[in-house]
Length: 386
Ligand SMILES: CC(C)(COP(=O)(O)OP(=O)(O)OC[C@H]1O[C@@H](n2cnc3c(N)ncnc32)[C@H](O)[C@@H]1OP(=O)(O)O)[C@@H](O)C(=O)NCCC(=O)NCCS
Image (cartoon, rainbow, N blue to C red; front, top):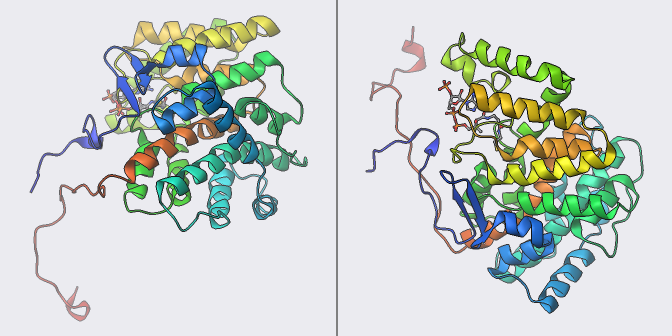
C-alpha cells in the first residue's frame, strides 16, 4: 500500500491532462499550448471555448458554428426560471446558480447519456445558460424581471445584457470577453478537481458541475474575489493602503499558525498553491483595470489596489493571484461585489466541461487516507460502557 502523504495533495500529480499547463515558477499559463496573454488579447471567448473542447483553434466556419450553437442555447427552460423565482432573495448568487444548474439538469434532454456527443451538447447548453442564470438571479433578487437573452452577440456581451437589460458598450463587452478568457480554465484547481472526482464515478455533467460550483464558493478559491473588493473598499483611500497592509501583516506575526490559517487573517488575492511568482493573468487584469478607470476617471479603487500591490510585494514574498485585479475590473464595470464569483463560474463552465470530457475517458479517482485514529480495540456493548 502507498504510504506517502502530501498535505493538501500539494504538488501531487493526480491526472494526465492535455488542456491547460501552469508553470508556477515562471508564472506561465497556457491553454492547449497557447499563452494566456496571447489568447486574452487576440482571441475571443468563443474561440477559446472551441479550443478547450476540441483541442485546436477554430477556423472561421467552425467559429461561426459554435457561436451560433451557443447563442441558440441561451434561453432558460421555463421550469428553471420558475424555480429561481422561489429562491430566498438573500441567497448568495452562487447558491442560486448551484441550485439552478441542478434543476436544469433534470430537464436536460441528454440527462441519461454520458457519451461524448451528449456531453458536448450538455456542455454547450450549460456554457450558454450559466451566464443567463447569473444575470436572471441578479435581476430577480433586486425585484426586476429577467430579460430574454440576446439572439446575437458574444457570450460576454450577452452576460452583461442579462444583468443590466441594456446592450453594453464595445469596451465593456470586450473587457468582459477578456475576463471570460482569463477565467476559462486553470488546470486541476479545487473546483475542477472536485468536478473530475464526480465525473470519474460516471455521474452526469450537471451533477459534477453542481459539485464544482459548491467548491468554487469557498474563500480559499473563487470566493476570495469578493473579499478583495471588500478589503479595498474598507481601506477607502490610497493614502491609507500601505499602513493598512503593514498593520495587518505585522499583526500576523503575533498569531499562532491556526490563527494565521483563517481566511480573515489572510490578505485576499494573495498567495497561490502553484504560482511562486505573480499569476500571469494578474498583469493582464491590472492593465484592463487601468484602462477602464482612466476612461471613467473614477480611479480611487484602482489606486488603492496598486498601493496594496506595492506594499504586499515589499512586506511579503507572496505572489498576487487572479482574484486581486479582477475584483478591481468588476468594480469598474459596476458589478455588485457578491456577483464576482458567479462571473468566474460563468466563464469556468467551459473549462470544467473540457475536463469532464477528458475525465470520462479516465479512471475512477479514489485516493487513500493516512489513518490517524485509535489502534484496533475491543468492542464493548453499550450496557457495559461506563
Ligand atoms: C490560495 C491559498 C489558499 C493557497 O494556500 P497554500 O499555497 O496552500 O498556502 P498555505 O495555506 O499552506 O500557506 C503558506 C504560508 O503562506 C501564508 N499565506 C498564504 N496566503 C496568504 C495570504 N493571502 N495572506 C497572508 N498569508 C498567506 C500562510 O499563512 C502560510 O504561512 P505560515 O505557514 O507562516 O502560516 C492561500 O494563499 C490563501 O488563503 N490566499 C488568500 C485567498 C485567495 O486569494 N484565494 C484565491 C486563490 S486563486
